[in-house]
Image 1 (cartoon, rainbow, N blue to C red):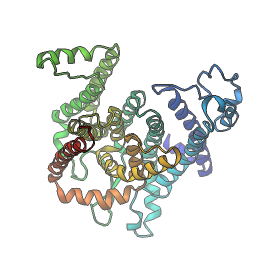
Image 2 (cartoon, one colour; image 1 turned 60 degrees about the horizontal axis):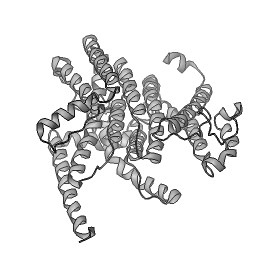
Image 3 (cartoon, rainbow, N blue to C red; image 1 turned 90 degrees about the vertical axis):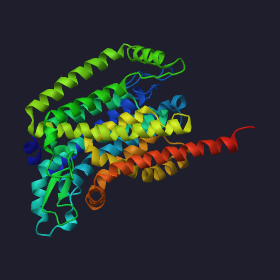
Image 4 (cartoon, one colour; image 1 turned 180 degrees about the vertical axis):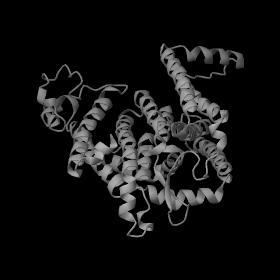
Length: 428
């Protein structure tokens, strides 16, 4: 399939991707307005508002149809159609541009560190792998667009986006580990080769124990933890520990959706075991995605628990946890960590734009994470090869203790700030 794709003329490939981007934008708009908690009858593929005139066939043409739907401005608000048009136009440009950047321009590779004579051969050799990477990134981009704008509108991210997205990431990872972005080897030196940034990088060669029962049990534990995180979990300690456990277990099966979740868990346990048995690149890729899921979601979950406990209020929604778990499954734990650290820089820009447009200073955390992920992909060589990897090798195992210390320090500072606010702003 990749050989057939690469056999097409480049203008034709870009034109196809532009068309796919337009359709993806239309799908994203449908998800944004119909998969949220409070659906709005805006999208032309959803039922129209009772006050709106009948929909025309032309209304469903991406981009163009929104201009005719502007006739419903008196119902949905002035300029309601502008954002959907921009989303579809943006994805129509973004997908071809991302493809060119990752497969033709060598945007993921340290091109500047190579001799000029090497570059054409390196780009040609990397193109099939770059195409595989692009496929994952294109799907992730559309998912992040939908999640971002629902989060803007409602400060929540539906599981209907993050669960299928995570499952898709695990699926393509189990086919091959080539979906993960390249790192230059040796680290901090002139690149001699490029390796996919799988779970064991940069501590290459890979650690053999993860191909034994230790790796299987770890993968099953990560999968079980993810499924548990999706369940309805409520720990109420007011009536003692015994009652708390009783209420907790009852809450897990309170809604009928637990049956679906249980079926997902059971199917996943079987699938992970089968892929482990097959081994090779299939297990390598799947385990790398599972580790990315655990680190991406685990970091946000830990921050959520500590910050909520320290401040006495919910610090962030659980949708941010499942979003970052999905991102980690797509890009691996290294890129997920980098995206998390870059998200505050993205937040500055997002807050300013949001405030200029809406005068609303509060912005949910999900768009920061998505923007941080996009920054990580576009600046991959600089943030990975020139910053993250050298520091990771320098710190070694100490980085785990440093992260734990930073989480503890964050909890202490938020706890102090909580009491300062109570002392200053609470009525006496």
